[in-house]
Amino acid sequence: MKNMTSPLSGKPSGSVIGSRIRFALITLFIIAVYYWSVQGMQFEGIQGTAGTVSRSILQGFLHPDWSFVYIAEGEDLLRGLLDTLVISILGTVVAAVVCIPFAFWASTNMSRQLAVSGSGKIVLSVIRVFPEIIVAILFIKAVGPGSFAGVLALGIHSVGMLGKLYAETIESIDRGPQEALIASGANRLQVLRYAVLPQVIPQFLSYSLYRFEINIRSATTLGLVGAGGIGTPLIFALQVRNWNRVGIILLGIIVLIILTDLVSGWVRRRII
Amino acid sequence: MAVLFPITDNAENLPFRNPLQKVGPFMIEFDKVSKVYPNGTVGLRNINLTINEGELVVIVGLSGAGKSTFLRSINRLTDISTGEIRVNGNSVTHASGSQLRHIRRDIGMIFQSFNLIKRSTVMRNVLSGRVGYHSTLRTMLGWFPKEDVDLSLDALQRVNIREKAYIRADQLSGGQQQRVSIARALAQEARVILADEPVASLDPLTTRQVMDDLKRINRDMNITTVINLHFIDLAREYATRIIGLRAGEVVFDGTPAEATDEAFAEIYGRPVLQDELLGGA
Image (cartoon, rainbow over all chains, first blue to last red; front, side, top):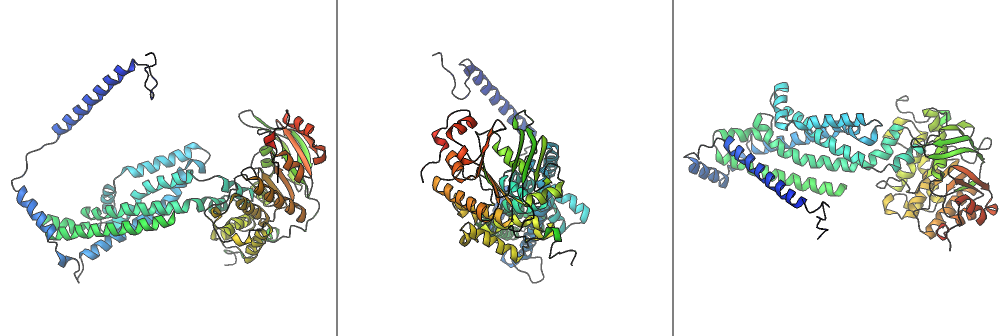
């Protein structure tokens, strides 16, 4: 019984008691945090009208307002969805291009000093910190409400994530082709164009499409704060409790997202 | 437009030089060359030698003896610590950025791991050997003149894989990929080919095909060839001159006939082992 050690930790058997104590402490801590959160939330019971409201919401979803799908004068579902699609496409394209220099800045194998890539990584993290809704509200204040604010919000926010993913792609490339190009007398830009880009472009495209799938979801909510797209009619319909209209808008969003996911997923499989 | 999109490069960059028309002998000179790595490892120790035009030099030695350092210092993929290396009379050691790129254009390099862009076509890979001859702008746009395409097809013809020109490099076998990289060096119109363990990841049969290609190119086009090998019998069979390195020092420099088993035992510091012979074929 001398060798009663855990195969993973490799520590002597005395630590079995120690790990039990640790487990108990962690459990206690989690319970305390949970109790504290429940205390913090003010819960004043369910509203008396909850039942009727839920029923009318369900009614609305079951009887969507089909007349809203197309209205000749505009401001209908199709145009709202189109607006959303346009915002996410433009936002993704802006991000996919803007993040390229950031990605080269942040990747460790493109600069000699670690401080260079480190600072690039910090900048990308800072960009990632802000949720797109916050960025959208900031841009609405800067450029006024509408789709343009939405495009900028998605574009800037996506740079954070795409820049990080691009940088990781650049860091994972095979150094050999670069060496071959250098040996043939190519300059730095030519090495970049003929040895680095061919290795990273397919992955860049794939990540951009993936980000586009995320962006189309975000773009549907951007309208809630006034940054254009299908979110705007959705918040209006919600405010006047027009559940039939809410129903048709949500249906439209679901169809749009499924369609874009299918198309983008198919394209991504073809690229890689 | 003429300034923005130069169609022809300037005279010294003339893209289509026949490698057979040369002015004066093309030599590689090592002058008291030493290399000490930052961690204290000695790569090269006081190397003095001259590689003449048209030679097929095989460098032998144990791993860690400095074979790669020797080869990579010729085109300055590795910097040397002291001494000087001259290629065709030009100092590689003291060359500035653009001078160095000009010198490198004359030196093709072949690697153990081929170093091709696997996703690109064979043609694209061979053409990439031409970028040193064109302006940055032109190469950014990917406009290679028709002559470059012809040159690349000829190069592929020389290594017998012309029919593979338009398929992706990763569809080829290892031996074929290595031939693509030889074609890249030929399209580059290199006057020297450096090959760093070119057959180490190939099977014996393919090894001989690749070595035959290198030998034929060396003879037919009079391209000086320097190869790192660890197979002793291959070195004897293909080399016109064998250089043995031990701990960064030249301990043997002679013809294949002089490179007896005893001489190899001296280079290796121990008798020759069976796995240092390719054998057969």
